[in-house]
Amino acid sequence: MKIAVTYENGQIFQHFGHSDSFKIYETEGKNIVRAEVIGTDGAGHSALAAVLKDKGVDVLICGGIGNGAVTALSEAGIDVYSGADGEADAAVEAYLNGDLTSAGVNCDHHHDHEEGHGCGHCGSHEDEESGCGHCGSHEGESDCGSGCGGCGGGCGTFTPSFEGPNVGKKVKVHYKGTLNDGTQFDSSYDRGEPLEFTCGAGMMIQGFDKAVATMNVGDVIDVHLMPEEAYGEADPRAFITLPISELPGAEELKVDDKVYLQNMYGQPFPARVAALTDTEITFDANHEMAGKELNFRIELVEVL
Image 1 (cartoon, rainbow, N blue to C red):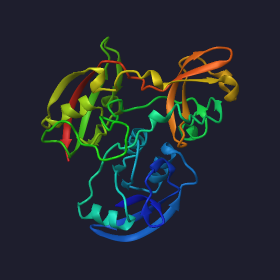
Image 2: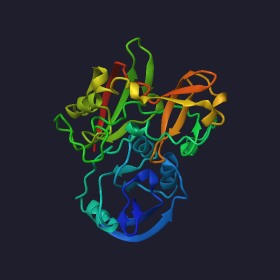
Image 3: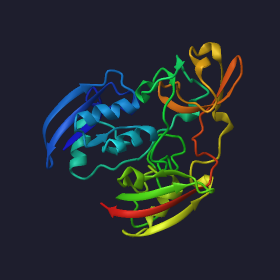
Image 4: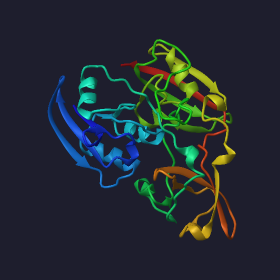
């Protein structure tokens, strides 16, 4: 097994997306047999997941981490243990001894959009990894059940507001998500593999997480979620209007194009072009499912 830790001077670096290096531990059983420190070369969130996947990493230990990064790591087959601090070596030993718990999604800086979008360039590109420092097109997000289920936008340990036998356990589920008009927006069945997450850790939207908490393996249930149990209502503060003159390349965009902007921390976040005039462009940084009622058919495949 290989374990990666966000790393700086022997300590766990607290911001995954800004980590300049990782310490990667190769382990056998409960023993560390080899370790090395690697640089990230300024890679962004999605690129960091690719870096770790290329190194064969199975587990990431970090401090603060957002939903987009957790999703990218999950898709790369990497388990995330967030909310850790102190010495990197000690955290790895705690993990190997079964004493390390995860805070789930524990950082969400979308409330900082207005303070510092920091979009240094605007243009069409295909690679989501170049989202840092750019405003460019992207293809949308998979795993629409994923999301911060109640961290409230702060950094800290997530405590679920519900109970159930599956809370705190890793589970695998298949699901299909539809809108009220029957339109399918996501399906793990179509991807050919179930979604794995820690129930009650804040990795999923609240209504989805809460439903899984009391299921038995083999159960198939249908749930209807109001916005407050899903992605919330659309926030008018998440609409960002900027002069086109400040964004070279913005004139090539059109309404409904999806792009990445950059907040004051240098972290990329997705947005949609909501409106255009000759001089200004308005972005909507709300989640694409904000304000919508969602329906899920959920099948609990396995409790690990």
